[in-house]
Image (cartoon, rainbow, N blue to C red; front, side):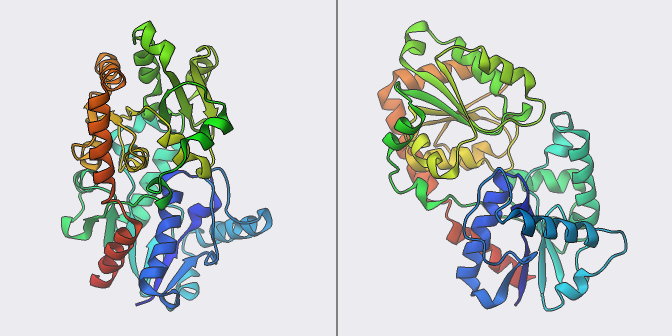
Length: 366
């Protein structure tokens, strides 16, 4: 079998999707052998990545983006020739005219454009609708990162359940390898114990309620623990960014944190708080569990499935529940230790080797 893996997201700003593709790109090659896997458009030699921009040079990126515009011209089937030897073409949401000879597959990362359209720009909702029409509907096989997102996709898009398979993502080994918290503390000058939140700053991530919950903690707790926010600005974040700038010394906004510092930053937290309103998988909580950091997260979408009893679950719309959960973990060593132990055990399931093996078997079965 010959697989062509569409890695166009390597060329743009992206968080979870790029992390998924980067790891899948590496581990599918280990699983199947390099002879059988190629990465479109000519991205086979990618060895590293960052979320904020392309993984290759500006000139090489421009050439590939121009080619993407060309192949997306309605009625243009140049990919039939480019991918003529592929048995399976696994498409991203950037390609509109996939090759017609290869079996078409794709990954649906989440269904928020349908479940929470108000939390996206109109352009993003339109792009996802086009993705559904051009790729998802004609695809022979579809992967989702959780059973929760699988059910959402089937119900909202009317998909045949036999075409859709849930395969959990993996976690980078760096989170399991006892990362040194002092590295992040020194780099970011974190002098006090801290609560950690990691995500792009956008409405779906529900950061304002976390800020409310933190402000509602007893003064003695806030004096002992800072709230550390890590992540780049996203869309519709102006009010939240203004609030962060006025929050005072106990709320630290670090901005975008390079991948190399995230394991140690996560490992150093007293608790990881992630009250997202919807996740197709939820990389941050799985990564936090792998480092042995106690996790508080939402009781909605895929998050209870990923946590599987190893995190404290709250209603993300309830500031009171979130505040009380923070106080419980921060003031109870036994509860924090229990969550840390359960989290490490649960995180062992999230292996990229397993993810790649299950994904390759999925392609072969098609």
